[in-house]
Amino acid sequence: MATTAGRWWAPGRVNLIGEHTDYNEGYVLPLALPLGMTCTASARPDGMVRLRSRQAPLDEIDTTTAALATGGWSGLPGWTHYPLGVIREFERRGHEIPGVDLALDATVPIGAGLSSSAALSCAVAIALRDLFARSVTDAEIIDIARTAENVYVGVPTGILDQSAAMLCTAGHVLFLDTRTGAAEQIPFDLDAAGLSLLVLDTGSPHHLRDGEYARRRAECAAAAARLGVAFLRDLTDAAVADRLADPVLRRRARHVITENARVLQIAEQLRAGVDPRGIGPILTAGHASLRDDFEVSATPLDIAVEAALAADAYGARMTGGGFGGSVIALVDRDRVDAVREAVREAFVDKGFDAPRDFTVTPSVGAHRL
Image (tube, rainbow, N blue to C red):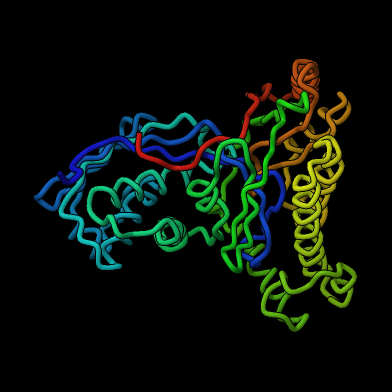
């Protein structure tokens, strides 16, 4: 019997290392969170699209697939462009959606830099696949979800977040070459090492639609062109960035080149089974690069990193696109409370509300419940 209704789930993600490298065709190393987005979906035959979200109870959307096909987006809340964009992209690629009811519920924090948007898009996409287009592959789901964000939302992301939502597995980080699509699951057993990965949601929502994200992508493209390569992924020596006369482009290129190197270094160490504490300084170096060279950090993120390190975290860095959001800190399991308290005290001292925090283990990717 064909599937006509059900519940589907996709996770948020933490990117262990590899920030702003995906749209430069570089390397990333994310892990899936146990927090995500649930999509309850049912088919309908009348061309109607009904969209509800527990997190936005006032935004009850009733539209049609025909309206979406003719640009019927005007006046709709911004968050709805993710699921509606996924629907439109399925139809644009030849997969008919005769009508659908979608009800959404999130456990991943919204706007925390933990990829709630990709969790939303991927949960809807796998629901539509199972209901209407079972031949669609995971690779196509990743592309559909990314296209929805690029075209219908207007954020020019790479494939990091959608790939993490679809491909991550429990107990592993995902080493992904965003140029070739080659993926490798690398064991990441923090419990066995007596470690925890602490996520600190600073409460400063990141906003990728305000133009800064797009500006960074354009700067990377300009830097690559001036250095004579298609993408900054093609460069491995950070000293090459010094050839750029423009100091902004020089910094952007240096971040991407060194960040790719950091991903490869951590992946190699984890493959070799060395003590994960050894990756801590690499994480911290990644934050310094994002702060100084890529200029996407924010004061609350820097405070959280500095306080965590002062409380004996092995490494800490902002995670996600930046301009707000969350920090990750690698800490001994018996020091989690001490690091948490140190960060809270630092925030209060600086006049900020204490961050929400939680520990995570690498979890499963998108699936039907």
